[in-house]
Image (cartoon, rainbow over all chains, first blue to last red; front, side):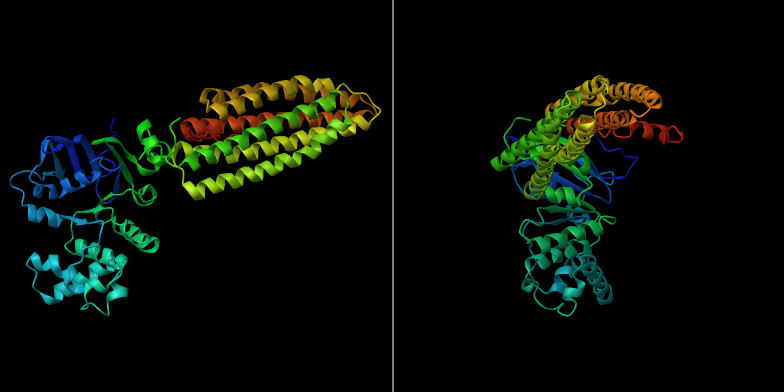
Length: 261
Length: 235
């Protein structure tokens, strides 16, 4: 049912292999197989409760924090490494796989310290390296020009859109492989949304983005590949342009054309 | 896809758009039929009414474009819904051109009606009959998103082209021998040309029906295939 990506056409960053996932006795994800390409944007779409956010949180093992949550079959590989292997350091994994949430969540510290936080956690103490990394991350997040004169001011004083871009800067400051985004623009106005989308588009050559979104226009604008989830299964995974012009499966067609949702 | 849209207004807007296209298709086909009848029955009033009624077809073309734009702006349709809106707008354009050809035929018919010379206009009848069948099936292909019917029109149009060629040869031969009766023969040559073009426009509608049904673009396939095989394109 799922169109597998051609691995030769682009390197696979994240390989989800025959994954089953449950909360307690309730199965949430069933037999998920996805090859997410490197340095591109992949969107997860589907109605509420279909499992897309659950899968996103499996990719950096955030579901480990939930006692009843468990993978019952299959695994996820990033760069060929099974992230559920007992030898994997979860802290290091989350450095490699950053996450941006629906609601921006800057720390109640300065703009500078927010971006430097991950670097300090990694043990970076050199002021010159920190300065350079913070500036570079803020430039990449298209925020530098707006905050360069007030780096020591509280991040909480920034607008919602700026806070979200700061969170992106914080995520990319530690140079992750993958950036996961769970509805990153749902609390933003159209201009702030456009800035975040442009940012994703500009950064995709350097990072693998996986975005959960309820906004299908956003998925069609920003992503190269789209996966449609329904009741815990991936119904269709294909090029975004293909999915929104000529989906392969009736269920996808019904969902994206607004026949249910 | 019969399932209701989550916005009921969307279903209503799509149904209204389809209704406008079908109304336009009905008017266009009727204009063509009346233009041909005016020619065959030498009915100058009928020819005049075809020319006048073309304004309704023009209005519908603008209306359909506006309805399509409104749907695109308001609902951002995708997949088969997007294809239906685009195809409907293109259909309106093709129908408007067909109605223009009906007007061309009516204008020629008027001139023939005014002439004292009797010319055998019924020569054009088989050509019209074939073109009208193509048009009828093209409209059905759009209405039912019938890919097989739409795709088959191109081959069927070749028969029309062949008949057109024969007719032009026959009329040209008569023209040479006409000695002063040439004007009406020239009018008939132009009528035949219009009918042949209507066949081409029906093929266009059929191609759009294939896109509507299967998102497959079959336009200029022969040219593309030739290019892929390294042949020079047919000019």
